[in-house]
Image (cartoon, rainbow, N blue to C red):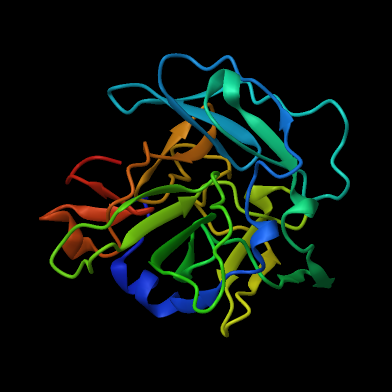
Length: 255
């Protein structure tokens, strides 16, 4: 069975304009606890509750993901960011609201955004992808959330100063990336809605020959993980003949 693609129309159809929550909720560094990681000489990031590193060739591997010894205060778990020895973790409940659940459907108001600017955001196979940002009107902007991976948008439609940001470890009701399908809600509140039951191939789910990962992801130690992130695109046409997957341009034939 071929890998399932993430077409640009998927991004366009789910895009909603969102405003961030108050500045105090945005920085991973707020009330953060050191949790240094023994990363190899490679780019690393948390993907759900796993830590993934990519070597120069783009090959992904799963490495140890240290978190504070004390349990987080809610099922949301810990949110961590930073390279190797400077890595920090903060209780997710201190930086964003919890989910309100009814059966298998859970909703989070004021979902995380890269900073306090204006963003258009979508959910894509377990990650959150955002395009922006205009500075917030009439308020002093707070610090950015450094767990997002961001880059300047390129391509014929890129506006001056426009950025693409991806969150490979967004909030889930019980911290299990592989157990939920989520989408960005409508309206200025920026609601994140999750329903139990992940889509086939989404990040964090198990993968094997009969169940391949979505386009833009690869199987690493039995789990679907994204290709090495280098955010620069929102649409396929931003990629000069390639494809836009999780905000990064991929050449034909690459994951």
